[in-house]
Length: 177
Image (cartoon, rainbow, N blue to C red; front, side, top):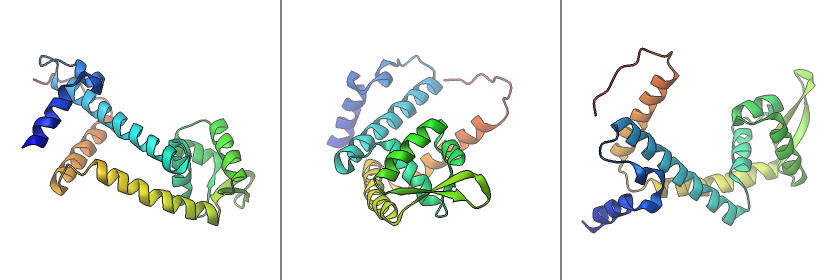
């Protein structure tokens, strides 16, 4: 019983950021949005910290390697840029750095001579696999307070929200608190 009371005290603590600024009278959707934002930021901050401390790597570099890991044949630079939602210049800079470290390599795209593909080297694949295993463990640990059913419910609800947000705009309906 001590853990739920401790968690409730932590949620009331103003040190948790924006979420602490909501009031009971605020709309439920606003409270939910702030809770999602605060939680996402908290998880991301911890992942960034652990990646930096353990591997000396930034989250953008980790995400870059993850995209290439999912595409064994490599990716065109412009597609990699779209997947990462960053500029082509950012991808070029990351590629230059990671190529110097021997983690990625550029090669001419066999389907388009004007394009370059980037792919993981064997060393890059091995390094990413090691980081990814530990990264997964961190995420599992962070979500450890939720049982399997709660994780599934939360996943399903967030999926429904994403589908709604991706749908064409519908007339504004007022929701009650």
